[in-house]
Amino acid sequence: MAGNKFFFNFWAGFVAALLLSSFASAVEAAGKSTVLVAGATGGTGRLVVTELLAADYHVVAMARNGDKAKQLFSDYLDKGVTIAVADVTEPETLPAIFAQVDYVISTLGTAIGSEGDNNPETVDYQGTVELIEQAKYHSIKKFILITSGGTTWWLHPLNWFGDDVLKWKHKSELYLRDSGINHVIIRPAGGLKDEPANTKAIKFTQTDGIPSTISRADVATVAVKALIHDQATNKTFEIQDDDDGQTTASINWQQVFADMTVDSDNF
Image 1: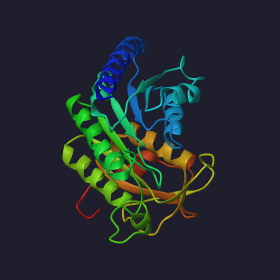
Image 2: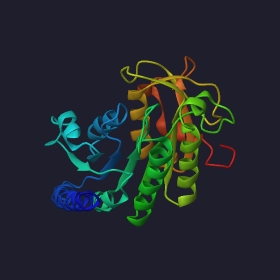
Image 3: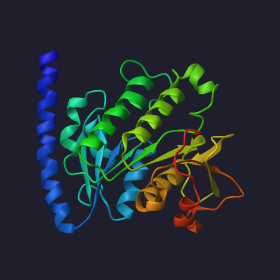
């Protein structure tokens, strides 16, 4: 079984390298940057993919299940999306898909109650570490990490019944900060909702305080804006619904990011 798994991973990486090489040639000719989206088939990841396309990026949609990814992104495979089959719990599958990438947005996360290798320690932390190491090796220009509000709390219910998920997410944040890579850490603070973007006013904080709710679509919008604007680089912040905030369409993104404090040990 181990031998079969090795050869499967080898050929999967080989095929991915060939596909991405061809994809990279087309991207270079078009003069567009390429963004790797880790966790692309998740609820937030798939919205990040479509936001990137709308912003005129090419996308490498990374997923463990290639068939699921092809089904989800079937309408975009000829419009700038390439599927890359890889698994952060199997690091040998990662190098090939980083070869032609400029940026990374990670939406990795495990569902409460997941079993086996799909748990917060192996995915949210160790898996993110593997992505960061590959990003360092391949000189990625910026790494956007989407984690969660509450990662710095001493006590949090999600840690009690979620295998310390927020503790592991916080460790991944600290690892990214220490990596030296240009980065942004985005913490959706509260329950993620499947509502359209630009529906509710949102606010930005750097206190990791009391959560609210936030739509996945708004999270995706903020992630792409943080990628685009240099003022967001090396900053960590929370986003959540708040009547005193602004809808995403009315936000002055340069000003919002410029007003934030660069990462510190306080958060």
